[in-house]
Each structure stands twice: as C-alpha cells, then as structure tokens.
Length: 210
Length: 210
DNA sequence: TCAACAATGTTGACATTGGAAACAATATGG
DNA sequence: CCATATTGTTTCCAATGTCAACATTGTTGA
Image (cartoon, rainbow over all chains, first blue to last red; front, side, top):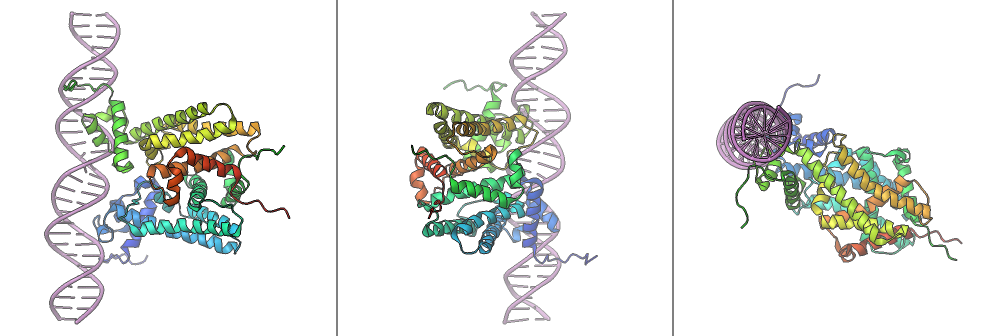
C-alpha cells in the first residue's frame, strides 16, 4: 500500500532495467530477454531504456559486466575465508565460482550466452571479464611460486582449470545433473572438492615402475 | 552456366536451409540466424521453410543434431586411427572433438549457443547429444577396465574431461587464443597432447613424503 | 490415362521487436 | 525564476516469426 503514484521520473531506471532483464533471463532463457518487456516490467515506455543504454546489446553488456564483478567478488570472498595457504586459496576460487553460479543463475546464463558482445565496443565489460580470469591466474601463480603446483604455462593451466570449474557450474545452472553426479553435486563445495581431488591426483594411473 | 531456371520445387530445400543457416551463424554468430534470410539464400519465399521445419527452433535443432552426429563421427574416426590401445583411443576422442570444432565452427557455435532447445520436444537431438557423450564414456570405461585410468564415478570423470576439451575447443572457435596459448594451440593435436599430459600427470605437486 | 490427392512453394496478413525522431515533463543551476 | 539538460513518451518504420489461404507440382490408383 505504498505510493501508487507514478512520478514522471523513475528514480533508478537503469538498475530496474537490469533487474528486469535478469528476471526475464531466468524465466525464459537468454531468448526471453526483450527490451520492451524489460521496460514494461520497469513501468516505463518502450523507448525509455534508450536513455540509459545505447540499445539491447548495451543492456546485455551491462548485465554481463555486473555479473563478472559479482563473480570476482564471490571468488575473492571465498579466498579470504580460506586463509593464506596458496593451495587452499586456489581451491576456494573455484568454490567461489560455483557459488556465484548457484546464487546468480540469471547472471551466469547471460554472461556465457553467445549474445554477450565481446567486442572492443564494451571495454569495461572486457575489463571485468579479464579481472575475473585474473583472480584465477593470480591463484595459480601463487601456487607455482609456493611450489605446490607444477610449473607450466600459466595461461594454459588457467584455461584448463577454468574449463573444469565452468563445466561443473554449467551443470548446476542448467540443472541437468545426470544420475550419479547429482549425488555429490547436491553440495557444490563437495563437488568442488572432488574436482580438485581429481585435478590434484591426476586422472591416469602412473605406469608401474617394474 | 548451368540451368538458370527456377523450378517450382527446390529439390532439397531442407538441406539448403541447413546450409544457409550455418553460413549465417558463421558470418554473424547465432544472432545472425534468421529464418527469412535463410529462405532468401535458399532462393525460396519466406514461408517455405515451414514445410520442412515446425519453426525456427526446429531448424536450430536440426542443425545442432547434424552437428552432434558429425562430432561423434569425428571422434570415432580419430579413435580408429589411434588403434586399439585404450589410453590412445581416449586421447584420440579428444583430438576428434577438437578437429570437429575447427572444421565445423558454424555447427560448433550453434550447438553450444543457448538457443538450441534441449527440451523433450526434440528427442532425436537429445539422442545425438547423448551419443556424443557416450563415445567419451565408452573410452573412459575401457581405460578403467584396462587399469590405465583410476577408478571413480564414470559420469563425473566424463564431465570433467568434456569440460576440459570443450574449453580448448571454444578457444579455437572463438579465435581468442590469448598470448602464450596461441603458440601451442596453433596445432590442435599438440594442444590436446599438452592437455592430456596435464590430465595424466596431475596439476598439483604431490606432498613430499618426509 | 487422368483425375484425385499429397507435397511443396507463394502471397498476404498480423503481432512483436529493435530502433530513430519529435515532443513533453521534470530537475537543476545560474 | 527562468534556461537548459535529463529523462520519458508517442509515433513511426523495417525486419522478424508465424499463420492461413491459395497456387503449383509430383504421385498414384482406378
């Protein structure tokens, strides 16, 4: 029963549009995101968004950028909790990634939905993405310097780790946890631990030294 | 200088539409795929596609399904070349995955663009996807039975391997080979070898037994 | 053979969308 | 208190997905 008046000016339309965009993505996937529907939900006319975003692409870019910032924060938060041990922090960055995906599925789905423009047209988006990737790189470098991770090209290792965790996160968000995975994946911390255990130990059985 | 007549019936419009769809995806990404433009390129009117597909979603599903079949074939081809050694075949499946991505970037991009409907509405698409995944699962089971891969939940291992290779493949297709990765990634067989080496050996340095 | 009939294409319409232009209401600073 | 920039609104347009009605062609059985 608050004010039912509609002031001509919205107040914070930009944030409202991002919020609406996220709702739409969660409801109907990336395809469900529509400028006009977002405007409708924000209670403004269909052309109002153009005062805050250059177009649909720009709105998507803004949402994705916010997503990357949240993700970086989530990763760093878990790392803080983990303390100062490099290996523990490395693991925690993965946990943060998964936690972000679970807690912000709308962001996550949009961020990696081929609609997000990774042009040079959105440098702040690119920067936010690079920062997220940088958190992982930082963890890896620290592990290598501490001697707990084998040497090797940092970018290559980072890519493989990212893929690893991203695969898990996608499973969570899409909710397709096939059979046996569902069990361990019920708790993403456990899943991350299993994944890390696997990464740590290696997949193949070492050839038996005669 | 062949026949320039336009027979009322196209001959194989279905295939022509899929071909056009792939062109559009390669040119302008998944967003560039338009039913009307595909029809235009196939030389038919804008509503003709509806005689072969229930709608845009169905066309996308058909392209994706074809993609999964090609991917499965590519994986199995490499496995055949690799011979009968389980570990070699496991590695070859990854090479086949990468080769498919490199040789069919349009298919690859569409297959994993959030536009492909993974509903129950397209059972043959789901089956094709499951078959691709099954090739990997088969490789893993064989490795485990041969004792060259550690025991563990097959689906979980398969997911992690898939993520691994998929991350590499995405890099190839998107062409964003950042810095040092570009070197090794120029040849996807080498990249795959590096990845497998990493998977085999494990990432972390084992704790030194005092 | 040839007249139904099924397959395949075409035309024309409609609602929705992204976008641009012109106009209206509000805030804000001199 | 008024000039001006912000922010929204209305109105328009082209492109798209989709549907219904109609046209053309291939096929098939009496």
